[in-house]
Length: 141
Image (cartoon, rainbow, N blue to C red; front, side, top):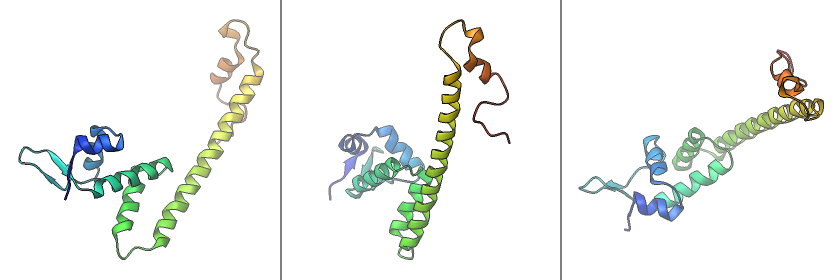
């Protein structure tokens, strides 16, 4: 069986060794063994696991959610419904962030429209609005 040092594994995937050590600290990655000198050695499955982690991060999953997905992937009692539930929660979270981003964009656009970009900053309507309690397009709570 071929084993890779942390440096070899990091280079293979274009990641930093510090990232792999962090993943180890949070329980996402475990070395197969350690040498007598204490060097971490990883098995071939580590590469696939790290690619899984990277793809999941690209889709917006947090490291905690990735840990759940990895756990489900090896749990013989888990179902695809469990994975789907986590995915649906992530979709709802993303939709909420999109709503928040749209609201921020509308508020910024309203501020931008109020400013002609000329004159001293003391008369800037954008800075003036940021010093007020309510911004245009902001819901009061």
